[in-house]
Image 1: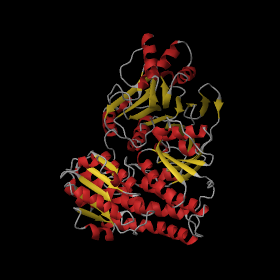
Image 2 (image 1 turned 30 degrees about the vertical axis):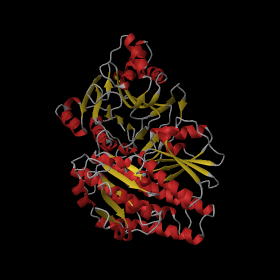
Image 3 (image 1 turned 60 degrees about the horizontal axis):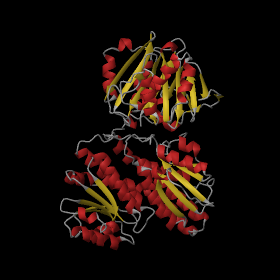
Image 4 (image 1 turned 135 degrees about the vertical axis):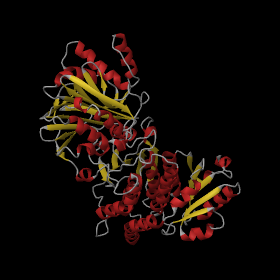
Amino acid sequence: MCGIFGVTSNKQTAGEIILQALSRLEYRGYDSAGISLLANQEFFTKKVVGKIEKLKQEISSEKEVFVSSIGIGHTRWATHGKPSLENAHPIVKKRVAVAHNGIIENHAELRQELIAKGYTFIGNTDTEVIPNLIEYYLDQGVNALEAVQKTLQRLKGAFALLIMFKEDLVSNRLFAAKLGAPLAIGLGENELFISSDALALAPFASRIVYLEDGDLAEITNSNYKIFSFGGQELSRDAQEIDEEVIKNDPNNKNGYPHFMLKEINEQPSILKALFERYIKDDGTIDFTDIDTSITSINIIACGTSFYAGLVAKYWLEEIAGIATSVELASEYRYRKVVSHANSLLICISQSGETADTLAALKKAKNEGIRSLGIINVKQSSIANLADKVIYTYAGSEIGVASTKAFTAQLAALALLTLRFAQVNKQLPTSVFKNNCAKLKSLPQAMANFLEENKVMELAQKICNTNFFLFAGRGVSYPISLEGALKTKELSYIPSEGIALGELKHGTLALIDKNCHVIVSIPYDDLFAKAMSNIQEIKARDGIVIAITSPQGAAALKELCDEIIVIDYPENDKLITPFISALPLQLLAYYLALANNRDIDKPRNLSKSVTVE
């Protein structure tokens, strides 16, 4: 969600570096931005409601005062308090400036306590209690480090904090603290950096130190120390920044008009590389370090990752014979969970920092449940906490709407399913090898569709629709849910995803001549049932757009209003979800384009949901 960045250097380039870093954090989603630098024992602060470019323009007119060797910057996604200059970060008081990612859950009681002591608040954000609380402890006569430590021990919630004091000009010192939100220190030459995202650190740092929950870092331009919130000195190892992070430029669209379209078209190459990485020449799948003795699986995820998990439930039960449940992490974390001795919790997250999924994993760990993370980002919180990890190697995904990360998750889950099926002897060797071969041929089939599809023409015809219904059966049901999510988050057109068999249970009331129904209907064992459901829709004047195979198209040509044809294997539930996802991704993209939406940064949304 929010982006956070700080620098302390022996050069007067802090402002330039922070602005550059904030630009690399734009993909996370934000509604305001700000920067605060320290020079001549004064804070120089500029904040805007809107984009980084606006902040750069305002600073350029007074850049002579924005010259400093130390500073902090922030892109804010509003949680407490609307986007405004008062609520934008950094939040600056008399002696301290603070940038904060996360949520302070006990801010209301702290605010009342501080107001009673005479401290003033100018905004509505929960963050403002932090600098005021630090000021209070400074007024009690403690030093800067002690004031920060005392403050941290009062805060409840999740946070990544950067803190800068006026009196620290000579030592060029910053403080950083982490609890439930990502934060890392980048090590340069006579300058150190701190950020919520390694992507922002990559251009400046040679090595990186990932902070852990409960860490407080004291940082100068030449050194850093890490303490617990209580004051115990800790050791955290530095490591090389991952090569994938270094080579990914969040501002390079490679000639595409939007990151989302670029990422849609990257899917064949990403899946090809993933299958080559994990499927070995001898026909085995390289998940040998994953315990396959389990008898039940619980998949936990949010949003798009949740729908990938729903697809995997069909695979794991039908192909591998393992009882599988799928649950939203935000629900799992707040209920009593009954687990079995040989159960496995699978956490799926693109960023590895999804707050509800991370909390669910912590809950499972506390209860002794084995865990597996399916993650795209190395050194993320979930990757570090899970017992085992499968990396999807999708590369940095900049568009808020997940595309390549989703199909990479499906790929990892498909391989995991086959691995379980192999170990549990659920598949003959010939069938197992045939399935691996089909997966390896999948990227070319996806590339063929992307090259020849006519989704843009369809989107232009239906872009003024007021409501979409996405529907499917079997593995096409969760793909329909994903299609509805993509359409509403990008085009802002209300969209609902349902199982086709549920039409009679209320949804038929929505069907009329103005309702467009997007039906994912592969030519499989459920085709006849789904075709009957389409008849029900047409009987009520609904407009039906079918996504099907050539054989399915032949059977549906007199029944449906539009047909998107995909050439995928008939009755193949392992391959169908990958191919079916492509037209739905493109439809959402082109609907958003036709309605002039901000495709890569849809309103009110962020890329990585690091708060509850």
